[in-house]
Image (cartoon, rainbow, N blue to C red):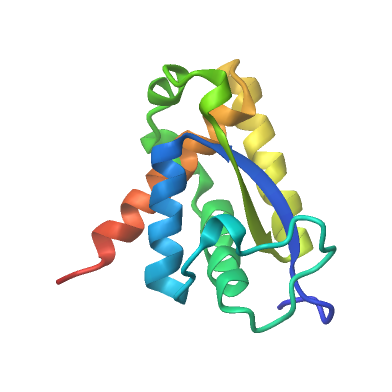
Amino acid sequence: MMAADGYKLFGVYLSEDVFDALDEFLYEDAGVVDYEEYFDPTASTVPAGDPGADATDRLVSAVVADFAELYDEADFEAPRGVDSDAFVLAHLAAEPQTIAAARERFQAAATIRETDLRTVHTAILSTILSRESAHEGP
């Protein structure tokens, strides 16, 4: 259940192609037209009922719930070929406890894989966004 004051924001670093897939997902799922400018990173919360925040909360919740499967399916090698300056900071809104759980899982995966968080963020979110686009039918 969402906190009364709304969602919190947190950032993940993604390759440009995964950022574009997230942008497309948010457009299709929540009607977000300009994701890059959608969330104000200086805001402490995003109000309840915001369609973009609701969509990212559902996405992050799915990442947390399915993390083990996503980890097993993820291609961790693909992001390693991306220049370190080419990653894009993406802001996601979610419930505070969901954010804490996601951060914990991302950090554990980075430790296990002996890699950085950009690689883990990109690999995991690429995998779940691929699943989401596969569920969209004609």
